[in-house]
Length: 189
Image 1 (cartoon, rainbow, N blue to C red):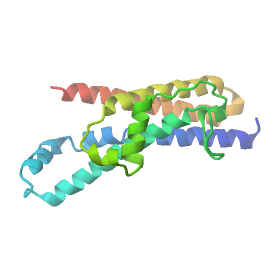
Image 2 (cartoon, rainbow, N blue to C red; image 1 turned 45 degrees about the vertical axis):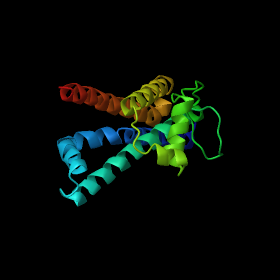
Image 3 (cartoon, helix red, strand yellow; image 1 turned 30 degrees about the horizontal axis):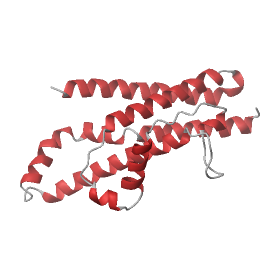
Image 4 (spheres, rainbow, N blue to C red; image 1 turned 90 degrees about the horizontal axis):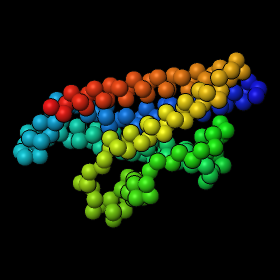
């Protein structure tokens, strides 16, 4: 592999890693605005209480949820083995042969109908909840499997940038996952 090819593959791993962190958007919203949960519940009961602040928080919350779901879908498609468009990047570009798709057909359809497009389904189900923790867990689990594969298969002096990118995103994802576990267990009470 020449330097140009290594740089291209390293950029794919970097792009994947950056996208992966957007999966945590909704979790980060929950952490940052935990203290505002009661405020949002009160505004629903009594809309006169600082409605502008409630709209701002609701908009940020919806944006974080949409970002999380969009990136989950994007990561799912990154693990598909077939390219629908010539400029798609896939795990297979790095020589990864496994199909790590993790969304069920129903989950994928729901994200497409309720988040990606304006549909009747989105109108009728706008208040439906998502099992966001389960979706994030599946996405992160498959992503770590892939990044560990990259770490093992690109460990050499010729692939330093690719290897380093894989290590960086494995470590950062594991730190966030551990933090999320502690946060969730602390806030169950």
